[in-house]
Image (cartoon, rainbow, N blue to C red; front, side, top):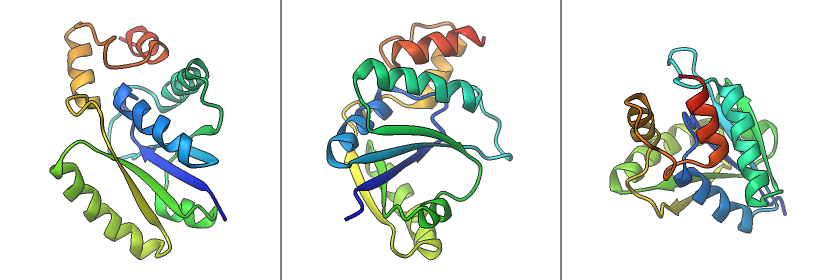
Length: 158
């Protein structure tokens, strides 16, 4: 049985909420691919390659060794299908997230009908990348919401 999952997101930046989801998924799956999706139509606040390095440092600091981080600029469902990955991990903070994720899941099922979604309930429902970006923009302390490697990265690129 293929016990591999993919956890895609913009991770702009990668928050402690994302890290909580990774911790949960890494216990259930032999391998988790954390995929930083890039979209040329959207401007990132933090470079994907820099965030990749910060996430990798975070995983090492947390002792998580069954996850790999990639940057990808295509359709996630297509990549998962090509790599025989059957499970997509998503985190949910509330019913709005659920409705949003279910709409995306329907589109992804058209591309990859074998894809199964695994939803994890977020522990820190107030934490979001947009909140961290805004607080960081206004020079507020975001150390409570991101790992030290992510904090070091996002504060170095101001």
